[in-house]
Length: 288
Image (cartoon, rainbow, N blue to C red):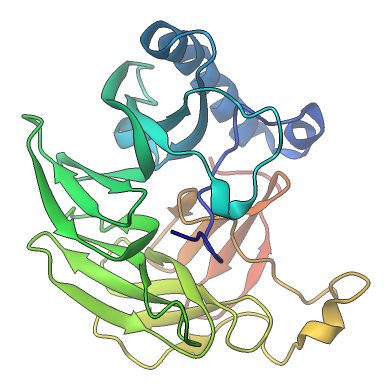
């Protein structure tokens, strides 16, 4: 399955360079350092000395870590991303446990008391507290983001890979019902849903510049929030000052309120976005 526009990167912890860490604000640097202290020895004990954790999915008590069997000697293309084993990491206590030791997943997220596991074929499964799995949906591309209530999750859906509608944004409830919320020309991906469960923000390249759009859980017509009026040729030689960078993934998005989203823009930079007004700015101080 080709990976296309999507990315699983949230915090590339194992491969973070000192330069990238220097650009992290103090709050996020402390978070990364704390995660390493618990996860590095736990991964080595569970999977051997060559294994490394390379992604964190989610925040807080329900955080999950993606583990690779070993770091490839050569850089991989986006179509060759390694599959992951999954561990659970409690950010508040540092406790770590293995969720699944098979290296077959693209990503995972905690949804209520269950764990959503997306395998390399695009099949999304839910695993309950007793370790029992059930298939929830197929044709899922990634970017899993659960509702605050844990009754559904938004995700990027794989559409017709040969046509212009390559991916779409949808919501999947715990009965496996899938509803497409946005499927415009080009790629729609990287969704996140507000804490009140009403607003869905996603990234689209439908205007040739990756921009934030907003819709609702009812699938209202998508409205462009950022980079309105910009065209791709204006980014040649460096983006203009009004350019708002898109997120690197949906897995390090934190809602500071029902209206304000904080996200990882890559290179150690974090931004905040008001989904009502479209106002976006670098988050210099970091989350409190």
